[in-house]
Each structure stands twice: as C-alpha cells, then as structure tokens.
Image (cartoon, rainbow, N blue to C red; front, side):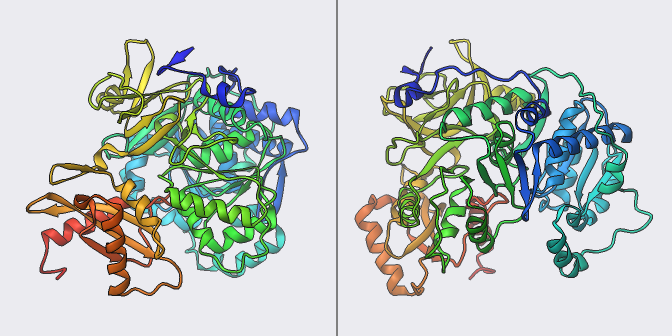
Length: 575
C-alpha cells in the first residue's frame, strides 16, 4: 500500500515490523480476559507496592460488571469515571466495557462546572469518583437530570496494610465526611452486589466504548467517541513498533487515565499485551524519582514537562536507569534542546536508550507517529505507525504538498475516532473523505514530511503569530530559547501591538542557580538577536518560577495569553 508517496516506512527502517497488522476483533475487556488466560499469574498492575495478577484483576472486573448490571446500568449508557490512576479506576473502566456501556473519562481535578458539563454532555446515568471529590458532584447533581447512580471510591480500600494505616492517620482524616443519608453507593457495597460469573455483552469492534475530551481543532471542549477497535489497534501498534517489549515488562503509568496517552499507551496497551502497569495516582517530581528507584520500570510515557522535572531534581547521582527499554515523549512539543538534555541524563544513569518523540491527537486515541528505536532525525516526531498514514496538505484544502513543504498534518488509520459527541458539523469538518477513499483527520497542526517519511511538527495553526506580515512559530523560538545557557524552559506567545498587529513575548524559567536580573535578561535578549530573525525576537522577556500547566502537564500557553489579554483590557490594574 502506498500512502503520501511513502511506502511502509516502518518496514524500511525496521524490517521486522509488518506493513499491515492483524487487529483483535474483541472488546477492550475481552482482550484483557484473553490475556489473563495466557498469563494468569503475571502481574497486571501494582499500586503502592501491592501487586495484582491478571487472574485476580479479571475476577475484579467481572465482579464489578455484574454489580453495575445489578445496579441498573445498561448497554450503550454512559458512565462517568472521575478517578486518579488506581485499581478501582482500572476495574470499573473494563467493567463498563464488559456490559456494553460507554466509559466517559473525566479528570478528578476538573472544576465543578466542568464536571457538570461533562455529565450533561455525555448524558451519563452513573458517575464514580473519590470521596474527597464528592462535594463537587453533590453541588451540581440536581443540574444533571440523567444521573441516577453516584458511586464513591475510598483510596484506602486499594492500599497495602502499612500504607493504609499511614494514609488513614494523615490524608484520610482531612477528607470531609460524606453525609450518612447521601444517595451514594460505596465501592465495597457496589462490589458486594457482583459475581465472577459474568456473561459479557456482545459488542462489535467498531462499537463505541470510550469518550475522551479535547479541544479538537477549534479549541472548544468536545467529547471524542472512540471504539473498541480504536484502542485495540493502538495496543497492537505500540507493541509492533517496540519489538523489545515482552509480557511482564513494567510501564510507569504516570499519565492520567482520563487522557488518551495515559489510558491508551500506559494502561490498555500494557494490559492488552501482558505488561504490568505501575499505577501512579498523583505526580510530583519527588515521587517520580522514588518510583524509578523502587520499581525499575521498563517503559515510561509522558509529556515533556515530566522529563523536564526529572532534570531539576537533586540527589539522583546513584539512580540506575539500565532497566529502561523505552521512554516516550508526546502530548506536547519536545524541544531539541530538552531532548538532548534528557538523553544526556539517560546516558549518565546507565540507560542504553534515548527518549523517543511521538505525535498524535485524541481524535485517534493518542500517538499515531513515533521515532523508530534504531534511528532518529533531529526535530522529527518520527514516522507513522503501521496502517496509519500521514500526508501534508495545503491549509484549507485536501491538496497534498511536495516533500519539505509546510502544510496541515492529516492522518488516517484504524485508530481514527467515530465522532465528536453531539457536534456533527465539527465532525464533518475534521473527518473528511478524500478522493483516495480514506477518511482523514484534519488535525489543525502544521508540519512537514521529508522524502524518508519522517514527519516534523511545527505547531497548531491557530497558535501561529503574525507580526509585521511575517509568520512566526512559537515552538521554533522556544527551541532556540531552551538552548540558551541560562534557560531551563520557555513559552512564547503573541501579544497585541498597534504597529505590528502582534509582537512576541517570552516567558522564561531560568536554570537552577541562575538569579533573575536585568543582566541575565539582557544576555538572553542579545542571544535571541543573534539566533532569531529580527521580527521574531521577543520584545519582552518575563521570568517565571514555573509555567502554568494543563491537567496533563502540558505548558498552558492559553493561560498566558489570557493573562496578557486581561492586562491589555485593564492596563490600570496591571500597571
């Protein structure tokens, strides 16, 4: 098969990776059940050191599935899962799938009104969350007419004995008590209704299974409806492009389950293939380092800020990372300089690998393009997965541009979503059937493809800055800034300018030990003048201790844009 003039790049660079893969026709839960029959005594996941085998994990899923049926949840109904990475989240995710319902994945740190939107948008009949987040649901429950069942998880139920004692004496004591008359079902009571004798609901591979949320190509939050096949195809592609993976390998599941990267790569791709997930409910740099030391994972998937945090930690001189077989960066652009620093860190700590950058969108679950393990090109996000095809088109058209020419990234393949829930017009704008007969996702991202099939991400089309008539790409300027000797991390945005329409402004986090001063600011400005076009040089450089992050850890450039817009609207307030 030929696509975008590039023939089977994985075949070319790997030899051992087939151009076309065979995909499971099972459901998400069916695939995990099958894996439990192959490897019943292998560990499916661990949580604070407490490990659960595949056989035991599947028993829990079946028990939960029958309990959901007994409670009243039916096929095709939506269940909102608002939990951190914990055993109960894994169990109910697959249990919802086993009865043919649809899992609506929501971040537990979402705001009250956001949760109300997610529940109403999905028309959820049931929701499950942690006891500490119950108040947010209670406050908006009367505004969600479809919501019948509210289920509550208490983290201590999944903890090993000693950890549980510590948790009960510290964090658990600070959680407000749920009223005795609250209309909720606690996890223990839910599971008591279940049985391991579960007959799964028959579902087709293309049937809907999961809703994930994303801004899509317009920046407005929308539910993305994904099928069983979407996730199972991803699981097959992840293993095919990582032939070093073996059943029993451990993945540090630090990305949250509400996000395609966490759910698709760190959780389902592992459980579908016999791997073990090290479930991490909350990320902090300190716990990150402790997890690496204690569990010696074979694979880590994360956003660039996760790896950036690792570089800032002290006391890691003896950290041994020889256990690593793969480290993947996605979800946000990994600057060339940050990659170099991470690779140096890995080498200094006995790892034989380099960080591999990937790219994807929630519209295709998550990653759809990855740097091969045996070669890379500076600045590239790699080559498309088997059966996933990329082409670059002239923005606003379906016309493919020549190699090396910039345009909109489009992709097609077995992981492409079913639709945006309740947004048929937006779905039609994003999913387009081209003359070749394939349905393509128009990503809204700018990129380039070279003659070898390697793809280069530039940035979101909407993030492009136009100053004095010139197109400026913040990600390119951030790459340059991150290479400066004083700079640890940067973010560039466009702000209004009466003459240029927009001008560039840089927000900079300095390297540890570098003091904020006008002298340092001037040296960075001089550096920019040498390495950037005159019209692109940031007119302002603002030092920050930290850059704002999204719930998944990306640099939240929109927050910085909003802050600047408020300053422009209220100059007196911010003088």
